[in-house]
Length: 77
Image (cartoon, rainbow, N blue to C red):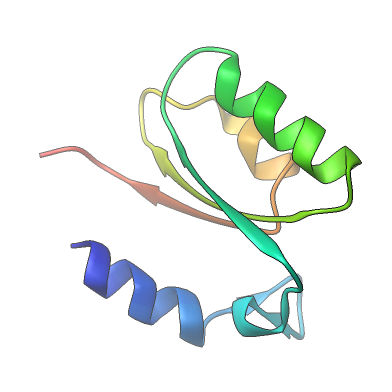
């Protein structure tokens, strides 16, 4: 499943015309539940990092989408 995700990640547009490949100095987040993923993404964004994230449907808060440059929602199982 993750290899399919990464292939899609490299081929998908981000914020209109930007692609993940064009993001400078990205950091990746595998976001689960709780506040940590949101706090981490907010601080990384505040420090100027581009953020690419994988989030778990039903666990990760939808607010994560507002904090990252690219987000892929997945389901466990």
